[in-house]
Structure formats: C-alpha cells, structure tokens
Image (cartoon, rainbow, N blue to C red; front, side, top):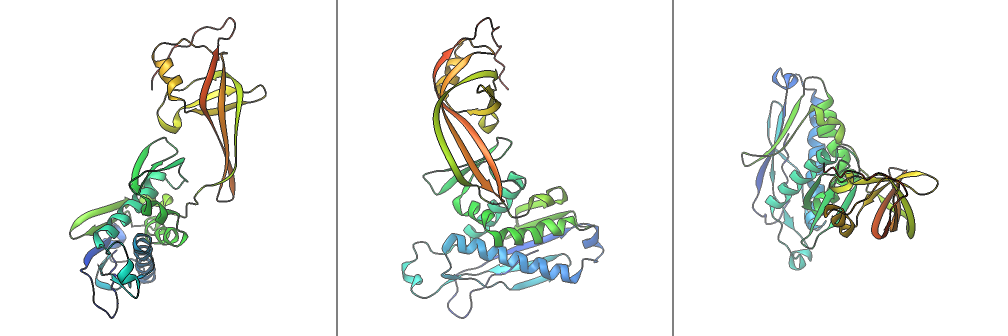
Length: 302
C-alpha cells in the first residue's frame, strides 16, 4: 500500500514515490474488500503525515494523493511545501528521504518492541535515542521515530493498515518500498505488535541506601541483568547498574548466596496504559559483607 503526499497550490519541493504493497492469497485472487483497501489507504496517508509533522512541524503542508493503484497496492508521491512565515525560519529544509527513513524506523520499532512499552529510553547527543526492549535488546533510532510510535494517531493508523490488514485471512505480508528499494516489511506474525504503545510516565522515584541479601545473581547484558535479592521482607528483582562492582566480580572477587550488599538503590514507579510498573536498580555497591557459612557461587556468563 502506498501513499502520495502533495503540497497544494504553491511551489513544490522535489518528490519521491513510496509504495505500500500487500501480499497473500486474498491479494492474488483479487478478493481484498474494497472498503478495507480504502481504509488502509487513508490510514497509511495519516501515518506519513504524522511522520512528516514530527520531522518538520505542522508548518509543512502535506496532502496524501494516490498516484497509482494496482491490485493489492497503493502508490504515492511524497511532495512537501513549507508555507507562511515558517518558510523563512524553518531550520531544516524538508527532505522526503528523511520522512521515508522515519516511516522505516518507526514501523520497525513496533516490531522491535513487540507491542510493549520500552524497558528503557536513553537520549543521546546527536538527536537519536537508544531504545531497550523488554528482552534487553537495544536499537538506536531518530528521536522523531520514537515519537511517531508514541503518537496515538500514528499508532492507530499503523494498527489499521498493518495490524488489522495482516490479521485478515489471505493477507500474510506487507511491503513498503521507495524508489524501487525495500524500506520495511512485516508479516502476519507481526500483526499483534501494531497498536498504540503508551510512553511510560514516572509516578514516583525514590532513592535510598539499604542492605540486600544475594539470592540469585545474573550477568546477562542490558535490562535482563536482574539480580534476585532479599530485602528482609520480600524477594525482589533489581537491575545491577554498578559497573565497578561488576568489574570486581569479573576480576575474581568471591561472593556467595547469602552475602549482603549495602547499596544505593533507585525505585521507580511508572504508569503506561493505566497500569503501574515498578523498576528497581542497584546504582552503587558501598560494601560487600560475606554471609556466614555460605558456599561460593560460581560465576556463569550468559
């Protein structure tokens, strides 16, 4: 499925073609519902418009027009125009290739996150963010690409032209191409990942110093590096974020189940989709007290 974006009336910037194409038995047999096709076309147009506005602001006029329609596909010419005062003050000239890249990265993020809020988002110094999913994997994308994913209008549009389309019998793949080159694709196994993903908003953050008893350590990378600790009342999981302590363990410092770590701990409560979530992190280990009569743990790197 593909959508054209044209800036009305005034002088136009150069354009580029972008194609949204569905594949599957229903497409091959020509039995895609005409109303579904129209809704998908409109949803894809909405998505491209949101991506453009996230990149360049609402002073860039964008209108979606279908320039070519074939069985199972829609083609669009993307053309942008800066209007009004913004034409003289906009810091960056609209670049259609950048919009195509934002479409690529944002749709890829839905797949990367598997329909779940990110475990962690770190802002870098070059207008990018490092996004960590709930499996501990990381990817770096433009800040605008992540913003598109968190935009309700864009997410609902993606749910329509990707998620719901791929959930239909006989449609098993979509492809988005630009200038004959593959931009991004998704198959029917990805259908459930495309829906609104709320950004997590902090509710409460508390920092404190406390003693924790080691129950089960972990040496996986990223957010999967969760240690199971006893706080005197409950068995809880903490991400170990003290690189100096991890380096000491790597260098042979002996530790065992039942040892006590006196630590600076950060406890963060967040909300997403009206659900609360608690994250616990060990920021710094001040002291390591050996537990009485406990056998040493063998370090296993995953």
